[in-house]
Amino acid sequence: MDYKYIVLGIFILCYILFIILPRRRTYIAVAGALLLVLIRALSLKDAFLAINWNVMGIFVGTLVVADIFMESRVPAYIAEIIVDKARNTCWAILFICLMTGLISAFVENVATVLIVAPIALSLARKLEINPTKMMIAIAVSSNLQGTATLIGDPPSMLLGGFARMNFMDFFFYKGKPSIFFAVELGALVSLVVLYFIFRDQRTKVELVPAEKVRSWVPAIILASLILLLAVTSFFDTGFTYMAGVLCMIAAAVSMFWEKFVNRSSILGGLKSLDWETTFFLMGVFILVGSLTLTGWIDIISDFLSNLVGRNIFLGYTLIVWIAVFFSAFVDNVPFLAAMLPVAVSMCAKIDQAPSLFLFGLLVGSSLGGNITPIGASANIVACGILKKEGHEVKFFDFVKIGLPFTLAAVTAAYLFIWFIWGG
Image (cartoon, helix red, strand yellow):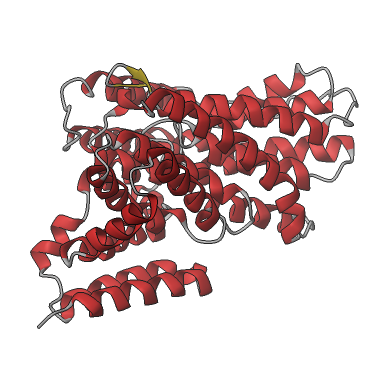
């Protein structure tokens, strides 16, 4: 039996349901994956192999470390010091956004927003200003910098796993500046946008120190993990297992430290992790794997390749801005997972090294989510926090900040990648 069109139908149905029922995306992805196995469109072995277990190890391990790091209050303590040194509210907000970006480069975006939100809300209450714009700026800054490193956000992990890029490859890849520098250039340009948004906030900031560090040990564990990932990336050059194993070991060390020092429940800590996203990722891996196995990736890449012909710049531009558009409205994880093999196949057909399209695709799909309040999980969380504080975020209020921020950041990164990798 030819399952080709059945597989495509299931994938499209799941994608439509992701858009209509975003809060049920995990159930949809897992149900779609199970259905593929039950109707024998995929064997259990194919489904198991479709999941990138190294990426899953990085994601789950980093979640645990980030959660305990957040509970230590080290990030909030450092952010508070930075804000207290600012000369006025405008610069305090910009420093908060910079701090958010720094944390987000190494900690998952949603966790980063949860870490920084109390500082922003404290500042807003003290100055008696509406925190809405500040929280939106924090969310988009988190999404931007989460793209900069291998462990910053699931899309980066997806690219790392697919292209077999290690931790250091995000800084320098094949002797050239890599994704990190493209993102940082985008961050500098978008910081100018944020300055113009907050330039009228001139009140002097005088925060009363409230945060006390509970322990520096989680910070040491996180810093050690980053260092080890950088070192071992020279040994596990094929990005096969070592990064995932290291992240899981760091998670185990963090949990046992939390258990024996703070008397916390390991089981309780495990239950509080973001298992929904974990199973969502696994389901998406299987759904995309089914498209690859049934030949749909080649069909899509043939269509796009014929559309752009031999024009590499047109192909690159199309990839980046299609990614920006779709990621503004749909989850970037399934979109990126589906498009990565398409980008590689397109490059093969037009005789172009895949790095150009892959890097552009990551930047477009990760940063495009900043345009709308539903484009990224960090945006949804930030809006949820504001709602609890009594501030309803309207769709176009978010877009007023998210759209110029995204256009500035993506354009800068897009041009950087083209000039470095387009030759």
